[in-house]
Image (cartoon, rainbow, N blue to C red; front, side, top):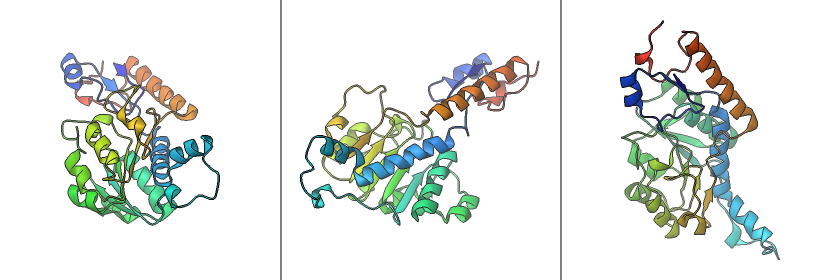
Length: 257
């Protein structure tokens, strides 16, 4: 058994594990709220230019009352588009809907009637969501269908005033296309916690003021990382006892001893 301290498992060769009969477990649920906090923090930071203006103040540029060159854009009351309304996507949507009075739009493989009722969320087609949302939050798992889901075409469908947030996987977004869109101001900004290659020591993104770049810290709090480690240990111990682990990714390989 492999007990992974993560919710994503795209870094494992699942076909290989299945062929070898190796069980894989992950740690969903315990990191949902923490990752949603970070996603919404990126959204607000990009909209209100928090990182950019923090650096601007520390550089000694605040010599008079700020004016239009330092203005950001509102978050409250705007349209929040969620690509992938799973656990984390729904948690981000709740923050937008109940905390900021945002209109929730979403797209995914399946409609979510209960969440539509809870959040007043509207299901839209992929292209339609990109064209209508003020904030596009990417929260899909990485797979063959989602690799480079957001590229030059998709960025071109977004409003010039829109902001992209990615807390999914870096490979879901064509990074070169995003850099070009940000540099040419075809979208307003971006908030990123994940990248095509990690760690990221240097990148064209670093030269851009309209992107917030964080070092893949979605679940990185003391409390949540401890909870993840404990959940992984529980899964591992259950497997060693011959009990089916709670968070079994590939149940087809499980055989009771």
